[in-house]
Image 1 (cartoon, each protein chain N blue to C red):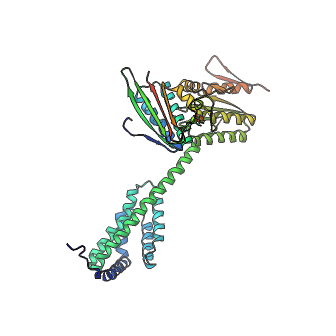
Image 2: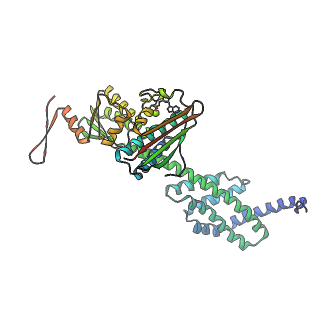
Image 3: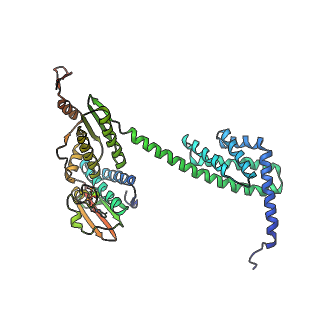
Length: 133
Length: 290
Ligand SMILES: Nc1ncnc2c1ncn2[C@@H]1O[C@H](COP(=O)(O)OP(=O)(O)OP(=O)(O)O)[C@@H](O)[C@H]1O
Ligand SMILES: [Mg+2]
Protein backbone atom coordinates (compact mmCIF):
# COMPACT_ATOMS: atom_id res chain seq x y z
CA UNK A 1 0.00 0.00 0.00
CA UNK A 2 2.73 2.45 0.95
CA UNK A 3 4.44 4.03 -2.00
CA UNK A 4 1.61 3.10 -4.32
CA UNK A 5 0.77 6.75 -4.83
CA UNK A 6 -2.53 8.43 -4.11
CA UNK A 7 -5.86 6.92 -5.14
CA UNK A 8 -8.18 9.12 -7.18
CA UNK A 9 -11.66 9.96 -5.89
CA UNK A 10 -13.72 11.05 -8.86
CA UNK A 11 -16.72 8.72 -8.81
CA UNK A 12 -18.86 6.69 -6.45
CA UNK A 13 -17.02 3.58 -7.62
CA UNK A 14 -13.80 5.21 -6.38
CA UNK A 15 -15.30 5.58 -2.91
CA UNK A 16 -15.99 1.85 -2.88
CA UNK A 17 -12.40 1.23 -4.02
CA UNK A 18 -11.03 3.51 -1.27
CA UNK A 19 -13.03 1.60 1.35
CA UNK A 20 -11.69 -1.69 0.06
CA UNK A 21 -8.06 -0.51 -0.01
CA UNK A 22 -8.33 0.94 3.49
CA UNK A 23 -9.88 -2.32 4.70
CA UNK A 24 -7.00 -4.33 3.22
CA UNK A 25 -4.40 -2.01 4.74
CA UNK A 26 -6.15 -2.17 8.12
CA UNK A 27 -6.21 -5.97 8.06
CA UNK A 28 -2.53 -6.07 7.10
CA UNK A 29 -1.69 -3.68 9.94
CA UNK A 30 -3.31 -5.96 12.48
CA UNK A 31 -6.40 -3.88 13.28
CA UNK A 32 -9.21 -5.48 15.28
CA UNK A 33 -12.50 -5.95 13.45
CA UNK A 34 -13.99 -2.98 15.27
CA UNK A 35 -11.05 -0.70 14.42
CA UNK A 36 -11.08 -1.87 10.80
CA UNK A 37 -14.73 -0.95 10.54
CA UNK A 38 -14.16 2.43 12.19
CA UNK A 39 -11.30 3.48 9.94
CA UNK A 40 -13.08 2.18 6.83
CA UNK A 41 -16.17 4.18 7.77
CA UNK A 42 -14.15 7.35 8.38
CA UNK A 43 -12.48 6.88 4.99
CA UNK A 44 -15.89 6.50 3.36
CA UNK A 45 -17.07 9.79 4.90
CA UNK A 46 -14.00 11.80 3.97
CA UNK A 47 -13.84 10.39 0.44
CA UNK A 48 -17.50 11.22 -0.12
CA UNK A 49 -17.02 14.76 1.17
CA UNK A 50 -14.17 15.26 -1.31
CA UNK A 51 -16.37 13.95 -4.11
CA UNK A 52 -19.56 15.79 -3.16
CA UNK A 53 -18.23 19.16 -2.03
CA UNK A 54 -15.02 19.47 -4.05
CA UNK A 55 -16.01 17.54 -7.18
CA UNK A 56 -13.25 15.03 -6.50
CA UNK A 57 -9.87 14.61 -4.89
CA UNK A 58 -7.46 11.94 -3.85
CA UNK A 59 -6.31 9.94 -0.87
CA UNK A 60 -2.91 8.70 0.18
CA UNK A 61 -2.99 5.56 2.32
CA UNK A 62 0.06 5.00 4.45
CA UNK A 63 1.06 2.40 7.00
CA UNK A 64 2.85 4.20 9.82
CA UNK A 65 4.80 2.92 12.76
CA UNK A 66 6.07 4.36 16.02
CA UNK A 67 8.06 2.74 18.78
CA UNK A 68 5.04 0.95 20.17
CA UNK A 69 2.56 0.21 17.43
CA UNK A 70 1.48 0.23 13.86
CA UNK A 71 -1.19 2.42 12.38
CA UNK A 72 -2.81 3.78 9.26
CA UNK A 73 -2.57 7.34 8.07
CA UNK A 74 -5.00 8.58 5.46
CA UNK A 75 -4.51 11.91 3.78
CA UNK A 76 -7.49 13.20 1.81
CA UNK A 77 -6.81 16.12 -0.43
CA UNK A 78 -9.03 18.12 -2.74
CA UNK A 79 -8.83 21.39 -4.57
CA UNK A 80 -12.43 22.37 -4.02
CA UNK A 81 -13.98 25.50 -2.50
CA UNK A 82 -12.59 24.85 0.97
CA UNK A 83 -14.47 25.18 4.26
CA UNK A 84 -14.97 28.79 5.43
CA UNK A 85 -15.82 27.93 9.04
CA UNK A 86 -14.07 24.77 10.15
CA UNK A 87 -15.47 24.84 13.65
CA UNK A 88 -19.01 24.98 12.32
CA UNK A 89 -18.33 22.18 9.81
CA UNK A 90 -17.15 20.01 12.69
CA UNK A 91 -20.39 20.50 14.61
CA UNK A 92 -22.65 17.46 14.83
CA UNK A 93 -25.61 17.84 12.52
CA UNK A 94 -24.32 20.83 10.57
CA UNK A 95 -24.63 20.40 6.83
CA UNK A 96 -24.80 22.63 3.78
CA UNK A 97 -26.10 19.69 1.77
CA UNK A 98 -28.77 17.15 2.54
CA UNK A 99 -26.68 14.83 4.69
CA UNK A 100 -26.89 14.08 8.38
CA UNK A 101 -24.02 16.49 9.03
CA UNK A 102 -22.13 13.77 10.87
CA UNK A 103 -19.39 12.90 8.36
CA UNK A 104 -16.63 15.21 9.60
CA UNK A 105 -17.46 15.26 13.30
CA UNK A 106 -18.17 11.51 13.31
CA UNK A 107 -14.92 10.69 11.50
CA UNK A 108 -13.01 12.71 14.06
CA UNK A 109 -14.42 10.45 16.77
CA UNK A 110 -13.72 7.28 14.79
CA UNK A 111 -9.96 7.90 14.54
CA UNK A 112 -7.13 8.72 16.99
CA UNK A 113 -5.69 11.79 15.28
CA UNK A 114 -7.61 14.20 13.11
CA UNK A 115 -6.23 17.20 11.31
CA UNK A 116 -8.34 19.44 9.10
CA UNK A 117 -6.61 22.03 6.97
CA UNK A 118 -8.79 24.06 4.66
CA UNK A 119 -8.13 27.21 2.68
CA UNK A 120 -11.25 28.83 1.19
CA UNK A 121 -10.91 29.01 -2.56
CA UNK A 122 -7.96 26.64 -2.52
CA UNK A 123 -9.01 23.29 -1.13
CA UNK A 124 -9.15 20.97 1.84
CA UNK A 125 -6.78 18.41 3.31
CA UNK A 126 -7.94 16.06 6.03
CA UNK A 127 -5.33 13.82 7.60
CA UNK A 128 -6.40 11.09 10.00
CA UNK A 129 -4.44 8.42 11.84
CA UNK A 130 -5.68 5.35 13.60
CA UNK A 131 -3.44 3.07 15.63
CA UNK A 132 -3.76 -0.66 15.99
CA UNK A 133 -4.47 -1.63 19.56
CA UNK B 1 24.88 18.72 -47.99
CA UNK B 2 21.75 18.55 -50.09
CA UNK B 3 18.57 19.07 -48.12
CA UNK B 4 16.61 16.50 -50.01
CA UNK B 5 17.56 13.87 -52.50
CA UNK B 6 14.02 13.29 -53.70
CA UNK B 7 13.44 15.33 -56.87
CA UNK B 8 10.17 17.17 -56.78
CA UNK B 9 9.37 16.09 -60.32
CA UNK B 10 8.87 12.47 -59.31
CA UNK B 11 5.65 13.14 -57.39
CA UNK B 12 3.04 12.92 -60.14
CA UNK B 13 4.34 9.61 -61.50
CA UNK B 14 4.43 8.22 -57.95
CA UNK B 15 0.72 8.95 -57.50
CA UNK B 16 -0.09 7.34 -60.78
CA UNK B 17 1.97 4.38 -59.74
CA UNK B 18 0.19 4.22 -56.38
CA UNK B 19 -3.18 4.20 -58.08
CA UNK B 20 -2.10 1.35 -60.30
CA UNK B 21 -0.78 -0.47 -57.25
CA UNK B 22 -4.09 -0.16 -55.40
CA UNK B 23 -5.98 -1.32 -58.44
CA UNK B 24 -3.75 -4.37 -58.66
CA UNK B 25 -4.52 -5.28 -55.05
CA UNK B 26 -8.24 -4.84 -55.68
CA UNK B 27 -8.00 -7.06 -58.76
CA UNK B 28 -6.17 -9.72 -56.78
CA UNK B 29 -8.69 -9.57 -53.94
CA UNK B 30 -11.49 -10.05 -56.44
CA UNK B 31 -9.83 -12.71 -58.56
CA UNK B 32 -8.33 -14.77 -55.76
CA UNK B 33 -11.22 -14.67 -53.32
CA UNK B 34 -11.47 -18.47 -53.39
CA UNK B 35 -7.89 -18.69 -52.22
CA UNK B 36 -7.61 -15.75 -49.86
CA UNK B 37 -10.83 -16.24 -47.89
CA UNK B 38 -10.16 -19.81 -46.74
CA UNK B 39 -6.58 -18.87 -45.92
CA UNK B 40 -7.80 -15.92 -43.84
CA UNK B 41 -10.32 -18.16 -42.15
CA UNK B 42 -7.54 -20.56 -41.20
CA UNK B 43 -5.41 -17.77 -39.75
CA UNK B 44 -8.14 -15.73 -38.05
CA UNK B 45 -10.11 -18.56 -36.37
CA UNK B 46 -13.25 -16.45 -36.66
CA UNK B 47 -16.62 -17.51 -38.14
CA UNK B 48 -16.29 -17.94 -41.94
CA UNK B 49 -19.54 -16.13 -42.76
CA UNK B 50 -18.54 -13.07 -40.75
CA UNK B 51 -15.15 -12.94 -42.44
CA UNK B 52 -16.82 -13.27 -45.84
CA UNK B 53 -19.11 -10.39 -44.98
CA UNK B 54 -16.15 -8.19 -44.06
CA UNK B 55 -14.32 -9.26 -47.20
CA UNK B 56 -17.24 -8.43 -49.47
CA UNK B 57 -17.77 -5.12 -47.69
CA UNK B 58 -14.13 -4.32 -48.29
CA UNK B 59 -14.44 -5.09 -52.01
CA UNK B 60 -17.58 -3.02 -52.49
CA UNK B 61 -15.99 -0.27 -50.40
CA UNK B 62 -13.11 -0.11 -52.87
CA UNK B 63 -15.59 0.20 -55.68
CA UNK B 64 -17.22 3.17 -53.93
CA UNK B 65 -13.93 5.05 -53.87
CA UNK B 66 -12.60 3.61 -50.64
CA UNK B 67 -15.75 4.15 -48.63
CA UNK B 68 -15.15 1.88 -45.66
CA UNK B 69 -18.30 2.63 -43.66
CA UNK B 70 -19.75 -0.79 -44.32
CA UNK B 71 -16.50 -2.53 -43.44
CA UNK B 72 -16.40 -0.72 -40.13
CA UNK B 73 -19.97 -1.77 -39.47
CA UNK B 74 -19.12 -5.40 -40.14
CA UNK B 75 -16.00 -5.15 -37.97
CA UNK B 76 -17.95 -3.60 -35.12
CA UNK B 77 -20.38 -6.53 -35.35
CA UNK B 78 -17.48 -8.99 -35.27
CA UNK B 79 -16.08 -7.19 -32.19
CA UNK B 80 -19.42 -7.35 -30.42
CA UNK B 81 -19.97 -11.04 -31.06
CA UNK B 82 -16.42 -11.89 -30.05
CA UNK B 83 -16.60 -9.74 -26.92
CA UNK B 84 -19.75 -11.63 -25.91
CA UNK B 85 -17.98 -14.94 -26.45
CA UNK B 86 -15.17 -13.75 -24.22
CA UNK B 87 -12.36 -13.57 -26.79
CA UNK B 88 -9.54 -11.16 -25.93
CA UNK B 89 -9.30 -7.88 -27.83
CA UNK B 90 -5.83 -8.85 -29.14
CA UNK B 91 -7.30 -12.08 -30.54
CA UNK B 92 -9.96 -10.08 -32.29
CA UNK B 93 -7.55 -7.53 -33.73
CA UNK B 94 -5.23 -10.36 -34.75
CA UNK B 95 -8.11 -11.93 -36.69
CA UNK B 96 -8.27 -8.74 -38.75
CA UNK B 97 -4.49 -8.50 -39.17
CA UNK B 98 -4.62 -12.09 -40.44
CA UNK B 99 -5.99 -10.77 -43.72
CA UNK B 100 -2.60 -9.18 -44.44
CA UNK B 101 -0.88 -12.53 -44.22
CA UNK B 102 -3.51 -14.20 -46.38
CA UNK B 103 -3.25 -11.48 -49.03
CA UNK B 104 0.52 -11.36 -48.93
CA UNK B 105 0.75 -14.96 -50.09
CA UNK B 106 -1.25 -14.02 -53.18
CA UNK B 107 0.78 -10.85 -53.74
CA UNK B 108 3.97 -12.85 -53.58
CA UNK B 109 2.67 -15.34 -56.10
CA UNK B 110 1.63 -12.47 -58.36
CA UNK B 111 5.08 -10.98 -58.03
CA UNK B 112 4.40 -7.77 -59.97
CA UNK B 113 5.88 -4.47 -58.78
CA UNK B 114 2.38 -2.95 -58.57
CA UNK B 115 1.15 -5.69 -56.27
CA UNK B 116 4.14 -5.34 -53.95
CA UNK B 117 3.80 -1.57 -53.81
CA UNK B 118 0.05 -1.91 -53.36
CA UNK B 119 0.59 -4.25 -50.46
CA UNK B 120 2.20 -1.51 -48.35
CA UNK B 121 -0.93 0.59 -48.88
CA UNK B 122 -3.20 -2.36 -48.16
CA UNK B 123 -1.21 -3.23 -45.08
CA UNK B 124 -1.64 0.27 -43.66
CA UNK B 125 -5.35 0.13 -44.36
CA UNK B 126 -5.71 -3.16 -42.50
CA UNK B 127 -3.68 -1.76 -39.58
CA UNK B 128 -6.20 1.06 -39.30
CA UNK B 129 -9.09 -1.37 -39.46
CA UNK B 130 -7.39 -3.58 -36.88
CA UNK B 131 -7.10 -0.67 -34.48
CA UNK B 132 -10.70 0.25 -35.15
CA UNK B 133 -11.65 -3.32 -34.27
CA UNK B 134 -9.64 -3.11 -31.07
CA UNK B 135 -11.46 0.05 -30.10
CA UNK B 136 -14.92 -1.29 -30.91
CA UNK B 137 -14.05 -4.40 -28.96
CA UNK B 138 -13.14 -2.28 -25.94
CA UNK B 139 -16.35 -0.28 -26.06
CA UNK B 140 -18.44 -3.43 -26.65
CA UNK B 141 -16.80 -5.03 -23.64
CA UNK B 142 -17.42 -1.95 -21.53
CA UNK B 143 -21.09 -2.00 -22.46
CA UNK B 144 -21.37 -5.66 -21.51
CA UNK B 145 -19.73 -4.98 -18.15
CA UNK B 146 -22.10 -2.09 -17.46
CA UNK B 147 -25.09 -4.25 -18.36
CA UNK B 148 -23.86 -7.02 -16.12
CA UNK B 149 -23.29 -4.59 -13.26
CA UNK B 150 -26.89 -3.49 -13.59
CA UNK B 151 -28.16 -7.06 -13.72
CA UNK B 152 -26.04 -7.90 -10.70
CA UNK B 153 -27.54 -4.95 -8.91
CA UNK B 154 -30.98 -6.39 -9.51
CA UNK B 155 -30.00 -9.95 -8.73
CA UNK B 156 -28.11 -9.21 -5.56
CA UNK B 157 -31.03 -7.46 -3.92
CA UNK B 158 -33.72 -10.07 -3.48
CA UNK B 159 -36.77 -9.28 -1.45
CA UNK B 160 -37.93 -12.49 0.19
CA UNK B 161 -41.21 -13.36 1.80
CA UNK B 162 -40.63 -14.71 5.31
CA UNK B 163 -44.20 -15.17 6.35
CA UNK B 164 -47.60 -14.04 5.32
CA UNK B 165 -47.34 -10.25 5.49
CA UNK B 166 -43.64 -10.24 6.41
CA UNK B 167 -40.93 -9.59 3.83
CA UNK B 168 -37.17 -9.30 4.24
CA UNK B 169 -34.29 -7.79 2.30
CA UNK B 170 -30.93 -9.26 3.14
CA UNK B 171 -28.33 -6.68 2.14
CA UNK B 172 -25.00 -8.21 1.19
CA UNK B 173 -21.79 -6.50 0.20
CA UNK B 174 -20.68 -2.96 -0.22
CA UNK B 175 -23.51 -0.51 -0.52
CA UNK B 176 -22.96 2.35 -2.87
CA UNK B 177 -25.71 4.86 -3.28
CA UNK B 178 -27.02 3.38 -6.56
CA UNK B 179 -27.39 -0.02 -4.99
CA UNK B 180 -28.97 1.26 -1.79
CA UNK B 181 -31.45 3.21 -3.86
CA UNK B 182 -32.43 0.12 -5.87
CA UNK B 183 -32.84 -1.99 -2.74
CA UNK B 184 -34.97 0.53 -1.00
CA UNK B 185 -37.24 1.17 -3.95
CA UNK B 186 -37.65 -2.54 -4.47
CA UNK B 187 -38.54 -3.07 -0.83
CA UNK B 188 -41.19 -0.35 -0.87
CA UNK B 189 -42.63 -1.76 -4.11
CA UNK B 190 -42.77 -5.25 -2.62
CA UNK B 191 -44.61 -3.93 0.42
CA UNK B 192 -47.25 -2.55 -1.92
CA UNK B 193 -47.41 -5.62 -4.17
CA UNK B 194 -47.74 -8.12 -1.34
CA UNK B 195 -49.79 -5.94 0.94
CA UNK B 196 -47.14 -6.74 3.52
CA UNK B 197 -47.23 -4.81 6.77
CA UNK B 198 -43.89 -5.85 8.13
CA UNK B 199 -40.42 -5.76 6.68
CA UNK B 200 -37.00 -6.73 7.93
CA UNK B 201 -33.90 -5.06 6.52
CA UNK B 202 -31.04 -7.36 7.38
CA UNK B 203 -27.55 -5.85 7.23
CA UNK B 204 -25.54 -8.86 8.42
CA UNK B 205 -23.70 -8.90 5.11
CA UNK B 206 -22.84 -5.20 5.01
CA UNK B 207 -19.21 -4.49 5.92
CA UNK B 208 -19.67 -0.84 6.93
CA UNK B 209 -22.52 1.54 7.62
CA UNK B 210 -21.60 5.17 7.03
CA UNK B 211 -23.81 8.26 7.20
CA UNK B 212 -25.04 7.74 3.66
CA UNK B 213 -26.11 4.13 4.15
CA UNK B 214 -27.67 5.09 7.48
CA UNK B 215 -29.57 7.89 5.86
CA UNK B 216 -30.92 5.56 3.17
CA UNK B 217 -31.99 3.08 5.84
CA UNK B 218 -33.72 5.78 7.86
CA UNK B 219 -35.50 7.18 4.82
CA UNK B 220 -36.74 3.74 3.82
CA UNK B 221 -38.04 3.00 7.28
CA UNK B 222 -39.90 6.32 7.36
CA UNK B 223 -41.28 5.86 3.84
CA UNK B 224 -42.52 2.40 4.80
CA UNK B 225 -44.16 3.90 7.85
CA UNK B 226 -46.04 6.37 5.68
CA UNK B 227 -47.35 3.39 3.77
CA UNK B 228 -48.57 1.85 7.00
CA UNK B 229 -45.80 -0.73 7.27
CA UNK B 230 -43.30 -1.33 10.05
CA UNK B 231 -39.61 -2.00 9.43
CA UNK B 232 -37.10 -3.66 11.68
CA UNK B 233 -33.36 -3.46 11.03
CA UNK B 234 -31.54 -6.65 11.91
CA UNK B 235 -28.05 -8.08 11.71
CA UNK B 236 -26.29 -5.21 13.44
CA UNK B 237 -22.98 -6.78 14.36
CA UNK B 238 -20.84 -5.43 17.24
CA UNK B 239 -18.37 -3.56 15.02
CA UNK B 240 -21.23 -1.90 13.13
CA UNK B 241 -22.99 -0.97 16.37
CA UNK B 242 -19.78 0.60 17.73
CA UNK B 243 -19.22 2.56 14.55
CA UNK B 244 -22.80 3.82 14.28
CA UNK B 245 -22.75 5.00 17.89
CA UNK B 246 -19.33 6.69 17.48
CA UNK B 247 -20.43 8.42 14.29
CA UNK B 248 -23.37 9.79 16.25
CA UNK B 249 -26.15 8.31 14.13
CA UNK B 250 -29.42 7.93 16.00
CA UNK B 251 -31.96 5.37 14.90
CA UNK B 252 -34.61 6.96 17.12
CA UNK B 253 -37.54 4.70 17.77
CA UNK B 254 -36.67 2.28 14.97
CA UNK B 255 -36.60 -1.27 16.25
CA UNK B 256 -33.25 -2.98 15.73
CA UNK B 257 -32.40 -6.62 16.35
CA UNK B 258 -29.11 -8.48 16.49
CA UNK B 259 -30.18 -11.29 14.18
CA UNK B 260 -32.69 -12.01 11.45
CA UNK B 261 -34.18 -14.74 13.64
CA UNK B 262 -34.79 -12.24 16.46
CA UNK B 263 -36.40 -9.87 13.99
CA UNK B 264 -38.69 -12.58 12.64
CA UNK B 265 -39.71 -13.64 16.15
CA UNK B 266 -40.48 -10.01 16.98
CA UNK B 267 -42.56 -9.54 13.84
CA UNK B 268 -44.50 -12.74 14.39
CA UNK B 269 -45.31 -11.62 17.89
CA UNK B 270 -46.49 -8.29 16.51
CA UNK B 271 -48.81 -10.20 14.19
CA UNK B 272 -50.17 -12.17 17.08
CA UNK B 273 -48.42 -15.37 16.13
CA UNK B 274 -46.90 -17.17 19.05
CA UNK B 275 -43.92 -19.43 18.77
CA UNK B 276 -43.19 -21.87 21.49
CA UNK B 277 -40.37 -24.30 21.73
CA UNK B 278 -41.49 -27.78 22.69
CA UNK B 279 -39.32 -30.01 24.84
CA UNK B 280 -38.17 -31.91 21.88
CA UNK B 281 -36.44 -29.52 19.48
CA UNK B 282 -39.50 -28.69 17.46
CA UNK B 283 -41.30 -25.45 16.83
CA UNK B 284 -45.01 -25.12 17.25
CA UNK B 285 -46.84 -22.24 15.69
CA UNK B 286 -50.19 -20.99 16.86
CA UNK B 287 -52.04 -18.17 15.23
CA UNK B 288 -54.38 -16.08 17.27
CA UNK B 289 -57.27 -14.23 15.77
CA UNK B 290 -56.75 -10.53 16.04
N1 LIG C 1 -13.91 18.55 1.31
C1 LIG C 1 -14.81 19.52 1.57
N2 LIG C 1 -14.80 20.67 0.82
C2 LIG C 1 -15.70 21.65 1.07
N3 LIG C 1 -16.64 21.59 2.03
C3 LIG C 1 -16.70 20.51 2.81
C4 LIG C 1 -15.80 19.41 2.62
N4 LIG C 1 -16.07 18.47 3.55
C5 LIG C 1 -17.11 18.95 4.26
N5 LIG C 1 -17.50 20.17 3.83
C6 LIG C 1 -18.57 21.00 4.39
O1 LIG C 1 -18.78 20.63 5.72
C7 LIG C 1 -20.13 20.26 5.96
C8 LIG C 1 -20.21 19.14 6.97
O2 LIG C 1 -19.65 17.96 6.45
P1 LIG C 1 -20.08 16.54 7.03
O3 LIG C 1 -19.38 15.47 6.28
O4 LIG C 1 -19.89 16.58 8.50
O5 LIG C 1 -21.63 16.49 6.77
P2 LIG C 1 -22.41 16.25 5.39
O6 LIG C 1 -21.45 15.79 4.35
O7 LIG C 1 -23.16 17.49 5.09
O8 LIG C 1 -23.43 15.09 5.77
P3 LIG C 1 -23.05 13.54 6.05
O9 LIG C 1 -21.56 13.42 5.90
O10 LIG C 1 -23.51 13.29 7.45
O11 LIG C 1 -23.81 12.75 5.07
C9 LIG C 1 -20.66 19.87 4.61
O12 LIG C 1 -22.05 20.03 4.50
C10 LIG C 1 -19.90 20.83 3.69
O13 LIG C 1 -20.51 22.08 3.63
MG1 LIG D 1 -20.17 14.19 4.64
